[in-house]
Amino acid sequence: MKRTLLALLLVAALVVAALPALAQGDQVELRITWYNDGKEGEVLRDLLDRFEAENPGIRVVIDEVAYADLHTLLQAQVETGEAPDMARITFPNRFLGQYLDLSAYVADPQYWLDNIPEAVLGSMRQGAEDTGIYGYPTQFTVTGPFINVTLFEQAGVEIPPDDSTWEEWVAAATAVAEELSDAEFTIYPVAIDRTGHRFWGPSLSRCATYINEDGTFTVDSPGFRSTAEMIIGWHNDGLMPPDVWGGSAGNYVPAAPYFINGQLVLYMSGSWQVGNFATNIGDAFDWKVIPNPRGDCGATGVPGGALMVAFAGTEHPEEVGKVMDYLFSEEVIAEFYARTLFLPGHLGLIEKGIEYPSNNEALNAFAAMIPNLMEEAYALQYHPKGPDLNAAIRDRLSQVIAGEFTLDEAIERIQADMDALFAQ
Image 1 (cartoon, helix red, strand yellow):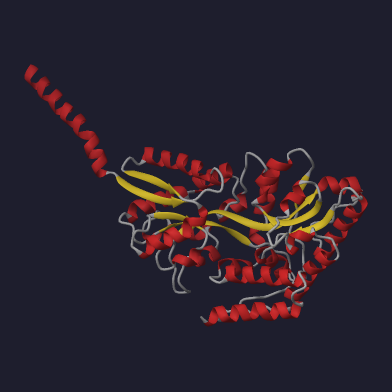
Image 2: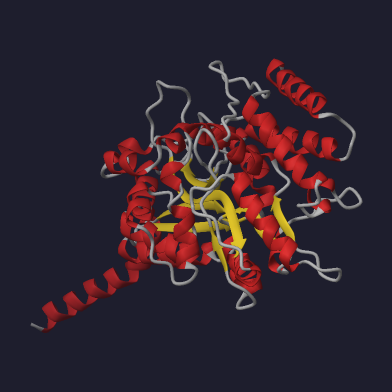
C-alpha cells in the first residue's frame, strides 16, 4: 500500500514539474501590430486576456506602434516576410494579396459575410473574382455636422428640420450669427474641415460623381462645381472663419476650436469629434449631431475607420482564425465598440444600436447614418487613389480661396493631377 501511494505521489510530482514546460512548449504565440487613438488598446488587451484564459494554448502579444509609423513598418515587414499575424490598419489597399483568407479558419464564414459591409469586404479583395474574408472593421467613422443648440435658442431661431438642404441650414445659422455677434465676439455661421474627404459628402449629395467605369477619376461635374462654389462663397462672404481654408501663415487651422469656444453655429466634421466635444465643451453649452443636409441626389456622409486584418504569412492560421472569430463575435465586438466609444462596423449591431456608457445620443446619431451612406462614398473611401484625390481637392480649392486660381483653373489642375497619377 505504501509503495503504491509513494509511486502515485512520485508520478504526480513528475507531472506537476513537467506542466510548465509542456504548457510553454505547446503554446502558440500570435502577434498583433496595433496603434492607439485612445484607450482601445487597453480594451483589446482586456478582451484578449479573457480569450487566453479560455484558450491556454494561445498567447496574443500586442505590439503597439505610433500611427505615423504603422503602414511604413508593416510595408517593410510584409516585403521581408516578417509580417505580424494580425494588424490594425487604415489603408487596406496597400497590402492587397498579402492577407490570410479567414474563410477556412472561422466557424461560420456566412456570419462574417452577413455582418461586414460589402464595400469593406471589397476593400481587402483583389477584384470581383476574389470572395475571401480577410478582416473586420474595428470601428467606423462617418462625416457629418454638429450644431450649437444653445446659440439657436439664444438667438430665437428655429432649428431647421432634419431633411433640410445646405442652403436652408446655412441661412438659419447665418440668422443666429447675425443676431448674437457683436464687435467684441464674432460668431461664424458655418465651417467645414479643410479636406477633400469632408468635401466628398456634400458634393455627392449634390450629384457629383467621381469614379469612372475603368476606375479613373473625372472631377468636373455640376455637383462638384456647386459644392465648390458654396464653400468658396462661405469664405468670401465671411460666413466661415477665414483661416480654416485660407490658412494662417501657411499652416492648417482646425475649425473645432471655434466650435468648442462657442464661435461656430454649424460645423461639418465627423463622428471622431464626439469625445473631443464631450471633454472640452462639457456643460458650457448644448450641442447635437444633425443629419447630413440634403441635395438633389440625397444626403450622405463618407465612411472611414480601421480594419483588423490577418496576414497570409502566419505560421498559425487556425489559431489566428480562432482569435479573429472571438474578437468579431457579436458579444465581444459589441463590448469593444461600447467601451471604446467607436461606431460599429458590424451590420447587425448597426441595426440593433450600441448602448454607450456616455455620449450615447450623439454616437447613435452618427451610427444611424451608416445604412444611408451612398455607394460612391464607400468607393471613394476605399479607392487606392482616394487619398490623392482628397489632397488635390483640398490644395486646389485652397488656392482658389487664396486668389491664386479661378475655380475653372483649379478643376483643370485637379484633373491633370489625377490623370498624371493614373498614367504612372
